[in-house]
Length: 204
Image 1: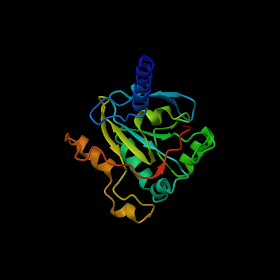
Image 2 (image 1 turned 30 degrees about the horizontal axis):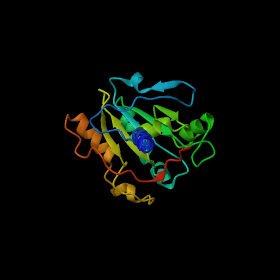
Image 3 (image 1 turned 60 degrees about the vertical axis):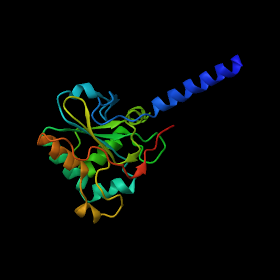
Image 4 (image 1 turned 45 degrees about the horizontal axis):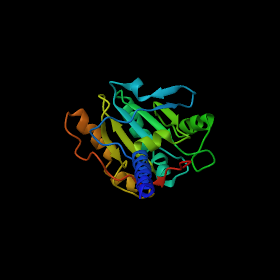
């Protein structure tokens, strides 16, 4: 009986760890801290951007859902619009080595240049620690962090979960809408949505 009780405690403890490891951040709560190297090999952390609005974009250039937004110029336009206003835009690549979307630092920089993208930096999260901490499931998966470090939005880039380029024109852009609410001092009307796209190619 004691052995059975001990086993149950071990199982319960193990389940607790698994749940915590897979836990997602909550809108309105502190955004998970991170320290990840960018394509220049520099360590970038959330603490570095304290006092600034930060947008996180999980990306995979081989994903057709991501390609829709880059081939139409939609993602680049959003990046430029945000960064021109002082927002920090971090593109995050959590594809494990050898999986779809995995790139070396020079390859990531070449992608940025060839697509005329305008992120503040590209973070290479090959181990997937940052992605797991944020519960990033798809590409694209978007997050907005307020200057006070709290998560203001998480989810899809828009309300058209397709790969059709024409849908970009008629889609409601959730990221843009959330930023407009924040800039106006209003609560974000739609703080959370379900992200769509390719699954993030984690190593585990």
